[in-house]
Length: 419
Image 1 (cartoon, rainbow, N blue to C red):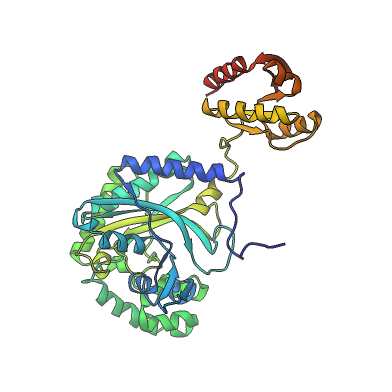
Image 2: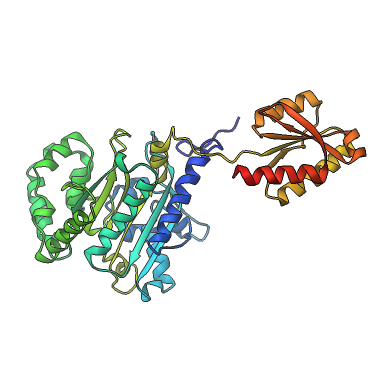
């Protein structure tokens, strides 16, 4: 028996209603914020991610699925969505007509250790705002994601955490201060973080190894070294979040796993999923558009981990798409009549299954019971001759024989009142 690839899971029909609820709710919320959908490729040049995400990040160093194509070009499956969206809006000139607000969804790929809520193929919904430089845009993006959780009934299950990573003016001196501190604690750091000291010491603050976490708690904090402009920006974020009634807490250790972030960063976390506590994250990345060849363009956005949100939705009753009519046919002539009737019922907007597997009336009735349709239509040789059908109400166990037109009319009437 063939099995799926480790860390890449199937989403089975019983799970899909929760996915559809998340997708449809997100689509509706994005529309309220005037966001348009963009659909971007899964496969990109590896150079896009090394330039945008950062060569010293775990994503680029350890986790990307990278391979040469037949022409020798290095390609990678996308490990995240922001870099791809930025490449697209720059290439097609969308950032030259700000403001530009786009959202996306789809599969991402990272070779991580599979565990609950973390897979090698995972799915994200994200949104990016291009053009606005003000802290109001940061807050609007955070308000959008929190409104989405509110609409899903998860608002009380999540918490907003915020931080600032400064800018090109205040980050270099902070980096020097941080490097000096970490050098004094080199022996307490893991091997990866000792290497990061040379290339990007901020990554040490993001390490999950216990020894590194203890060092990070004592290390200098970026939020305490902000330049006046970044400090004013962050104060504006906090003030406006408070004015909108959005609760939050500062998290000075949050640096995110991507190098392109500047100023505001945030995570939406939960205490219900153990160590995989971040369900959405994002921030401002004012230099990324320019770094990928576009005009200097401020930008802010977020991505939501769909698998983790689905875990929060588990146990909630979500209506499934079930058949409304099950069709039973007995004999070759009945099969032809059944196909014609099924087409007529579907044209009327009714969901129909059955009629494709031969068997006795008893066996087909068992399948009808398992299928869950509230109505069953039975067509045998006698019904073909008379132009009538047997219409059975499954929950009541009652049935009557009607002309085909009357049966369709009855089912259409029922469907109208059942909606």
